[in-house]
Image 1: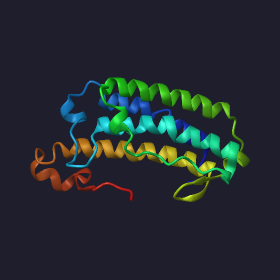
Image 2: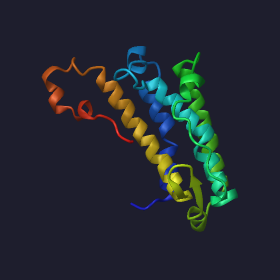
Image 3: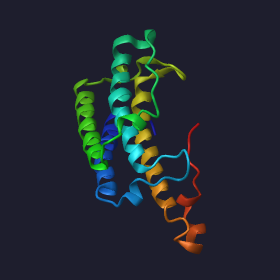
Image 4: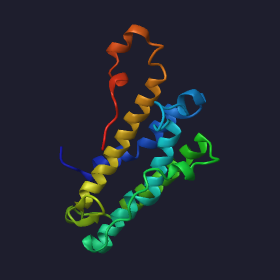
Length: 179
């Protein structure tokens, strides 16, 4: 499927409600347990999503529109949540993510992007030339990646509890994605 901005927005606006529905008021055993040393828990993922709302998606979209390829994006700190989420509760993070996503989508809509705007290019510090369309499509798929990750992390908590059914539960056999 080609990228359609309206489809992207319709997915992006649902992510906060999905996360709230899945995670709010769950016992910490679900939200603060991970898949082993060096892996994230659901709390970490929400912190990571917040950092993206603050420093990645809309700041980079605006850079493309203002500077094109003349100025590279600021590198993204994939582990910023390790310091930024300290002392916060999951409810606070969910509220912050919901607020930031709403503000970012309001700002994105206000840009009134035209098809030619979506083909404008920027410079990623690792990937090189990228289009605004690619950036926005990646924002949506990034959400889906982390929704998948959260379901995988949570399923991991019951890996042994499910007994012999484990072999039929694909989420327990997924080792993550990405480089």
